[in-house]
Image (cartoon, rainbow, N blue to C red; front, top):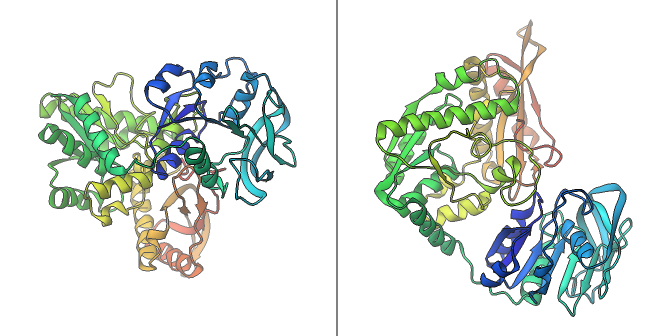
Length: 508
């Protein structure tokens, strides 16, 4: 096992995910974890994550020095490098201006981390401080134009650190660096698998639930479906599945989803039509955070009412994933909130059901791999992500039934055309957004003054970062033509060219 200590980085779980990609178990611990816990867990190595703080800021997370006395390899990343240097009597200072984004570093090929790599490496930087004076016993093994110590090592103690982020896809040799640390330095064994994760997850669910009853929130998406099948395998008839139509679904979604669950997966699902209730809760609301919280609270209240009709229910199972958690709030470390997801940040404090979230440490592609292990068919697993708040966060501004109906038609046309073009599976997520603005147009020699719709499509590995999808011009032309001709109320179509970062995938 490789232990990852969380100092608040948005990429902490991504580090653990990269470790799992190498078929090694990666577990995340709070940065203040006791050294004895890591020793008892049999950690073969420790990785110190990045973080948003300065090591000298009041209340900045610190490193327990006992971790460095465990006689196991340690790798510090970004903030992890700085806190390691500070703890070991090096000097860290403010950089003068923050460095975020692509950079190039010159590496020492004699370093254990960079052996057999090209001496100049493109990397992803994200820091405001830097190491100026090395701790005793260390030597610099990489530098960049603005960072004289971009990596350092003490091979005798088996302590290593890099200022950049090897875990992100923007550092092409990042996996090679992690692999050298995990196998070459830590001597870990590649014996972890998704089958093992499934077995462990079932065991944890059974242990937590005991003889209790679980109410599963199913939506038709990959996350909630895998959650339902996993929970059903763990507790069998103790599971109750409910599908809530919140009035914010894609066109025809309710009928399609219920048929899939009942006929293909054998789940006993109760369908609930609560669309008018959700729309009433959203009346007059324009702020996206308030919308998410209203949707989340209504979602839970409806589930609690259904639980009351079903008899005693003790737990609510949700398909929360790690990108949802890290963007909403940090559960293990001091990370920053980006936006609230209804699965995590939209839950009311007075909720009566205890949560079961077996996927909260996984990314979307890992959930799909888990679904394959559980025997779920490929057609369902290949569906693009759909947000829990549904079209409520794709109608910018106040949500009304009429706006939802317009957006449903726009969205249907977009997905139809990318499927027809054979590019659906190559896109991570594609959807439409309805803007709260109108534009002048002309149709049939008559002036129109209708809404504008935005098409959004991205490619990604894990939803932590994403790039806009280069959809062929001919496909976009057909989509635009169909929308303005077939959807009454839209006369202008735009395409979003923003990557993540700086934007998020969803608009709200």
